Length: 186
Image (cartoon, rainbow, N blue to C red; front, top):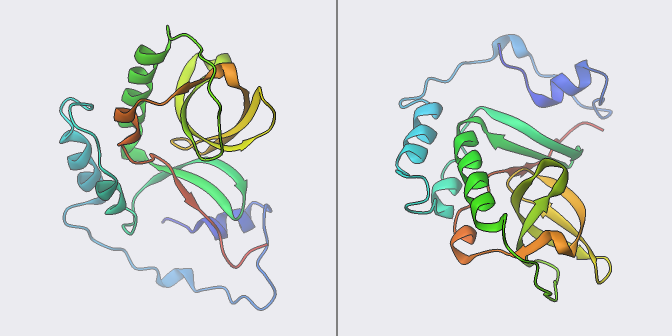
């Protein structure tokens, strides 16, 4: 039987309910029947991309999935107010995006760019030999910036020589992680 993230965190001693919070009776959980199933919904979206980058996944398609109850993977927890998740069935899309970015950027040459907050960029993760899409959160110095790798929900401080201008065709696909937050716990 599935449990809520809040209940699980409290159970593991990582959080506690706020004073005055009333526990819900979990014995009366009802099971929703989906037709089609959430897996089929995303699978159809992803499979319609044949090949994956022949056309981009527009933001509207990802937006339509936001209000559905779908299985997710927790990518990164920054705080209870900032948790990043990915839909499990978009894992292949993330891998394909990573391969495309590697092919595009691996042999690219660094060029000096005046980076500014909110700019989109390609970010090299040196210790993993990967390229990820990112957005600059804050310019720290002329050579250091804090970026959000928005497909995996990770914030990093990187040297600007690890950044490249993100190609327009890589900006059209929606973000592959979703920022969430927990409520009623501290």
